[in-house]
Length: 303
Ligand SMILES: NC(=O)c1ccc[n+]([C@@H]2O[C@H](COP(=O)([O-])OP(=O)(O)OC[C@H]3O[C@@H](n4cnc5c(N)ncnc54)[C@H](OP(=O)(O)O)[C@@H]3O)[C@@H](O)[C@H]2O)c1
View 1 (spheres, protein in one colour):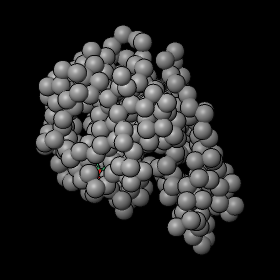
View 2 (tube, protein in one colour; view 1 turned 90 degrees about the horizontal axis):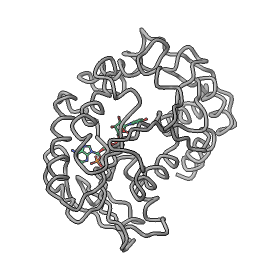
View 3 (tube, protein in one colour; view 1 turned 180 degrees about the vertical axis):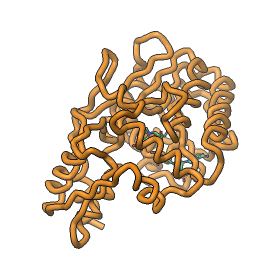
View 4 (cartoon, protein in one colour; view 1 turned 90 degrees about the vertical axis):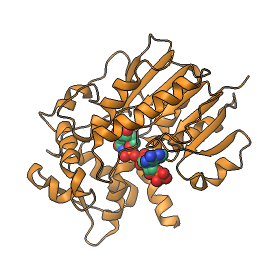
């Protein structure tokens, strides 16, 4: 019988791409995507007979129906509405825990996490993941925790900056030759789909890091942006003391400091830097940053 897999929240980037990968898989698993607003499910999903979109909210616990699911994929969504991130993480993870335990069919939980989330301090907003990992680590027979690098897609803004006049690239990665782990959503989706279908074969809970083919510095991102857009860009490093001003244009004030703290944690001397090395369980994807940016640039031009 094909496996039945529940993904929550299905509208997260990792959730969406993993569903896409699962629906293309030969074993044809049945996928339930749980959305706050099911009308947001992409039409290519809803047209697939192996997919259903249902209404559910990890924040309230309403609609978290994992009944008949063999495996659950939970991606803790960050909150930016002023709620304390720790309180939010606890509430959501407790709701997922209850729903998992209520559904006796669930044998496997894949938990999306982040590099550095094993620490309970100095990781800024990633305490969301530390708390989720802690609450859910033994909630199913098999719990697998994936800790990916930064999504390539987070650099989509650099393409917009490159199209502006003059073309620039503002970067928080300093010094500009400091390399950090990054990975494409396609590689994430492939690895998460395979893990949901086949498990890890390792004792539970099993944690692994997920990197792309190599780490990238700001200089590498600049080069990839230039190749993807065909435009030369000027690098504009955002130094540590300017980070709050820089991110203050995008992140609400109540969450700004912990966002900056996360960034500082991946810069030289930060606690997450220790996680940049590969270990025996690290998985590597094969998609280069330039290929993701080329694809995003092509989509942008299609609009
Ligand atoms: N971004 C990265 O580079 C990166 C790297 C490593 C790890 N991570 C981890 O990935 C996870 C996702 O982070 P992200 O920033 O990339 O977020 P994201 O995938 O953009 O997901 C946010 C989405 O979650 C949905 N959501 C929020 N609250 C919800 C609720 N109460 N119930 C149901 N759905 C809800 C919202 O979709 P709707 O508005 O459509 O409901 C929202 O757009 C985090 O745990 C993060 O630490 C991210």
